[in-house]
Each structure stands twice: as C-alpha cells, then as structure tokens.
Image 1 (cartoon, rainbow, N blue to C red):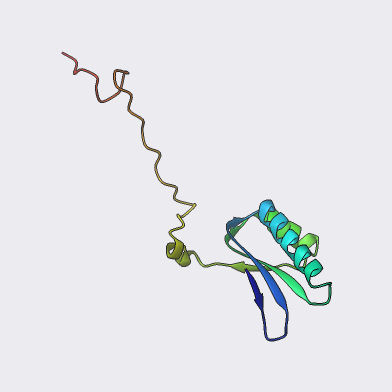
Image 2: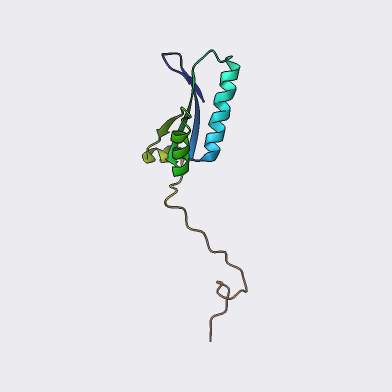
Length: 110
C-alpha cells in the first residue's frame, strides 16, 4: 500500500502477521522501486506493520539504521481478518486409519 502524508512524504507499507527477514527484503525492494519511480526527488519511507516482530528483525533495523518505520498492530485487531493467534495454534486432528491398531474401527476386545 502507498500513502502520502500532509508533508508530501510517501510511505510504502508492508503488512505481516510476524515481521521477519522476508518482510525486510520486501519493504526494502518496494522502497527502492518507489525511489527509482520518482527519480529520487521525493521523500519515501518504508513502513512495516505487524502483530509481532522477530527479535532478529528488530536488531537488524536498529543496527543497520535502515530508516524504516515499524507499527505494532494490536492483537485485538486479529479478529478483523480472522488471523489466528500464533500463541494458540489449532489442535492437530488425529488421522483415523481403518483396520489399524488404536483406530476406531478396531473390534472390541472379548
């Protein structure tokens, strides 16, 4: 997504559930392409909005002085797009194989 604020700064946005190295590569590419598109004449900032940021991601952004803006999306907004809570993954269903020990089709012991 691309936005322009009242100071004429263009922001390239990337939205993620969890921001990691892949998000970093995407936003840097988008910012570079936008700067090239505008002939390096406009101020363009990269923004990553995410529910969670990996520790390595935060370290790289700070140490490398990448000038990216980070926006933490509150967890209560997860329901807006039906994004499941990463801390509570859904249970893995048990696969039932007929005729195998421990399956529901086993005959009752006599």
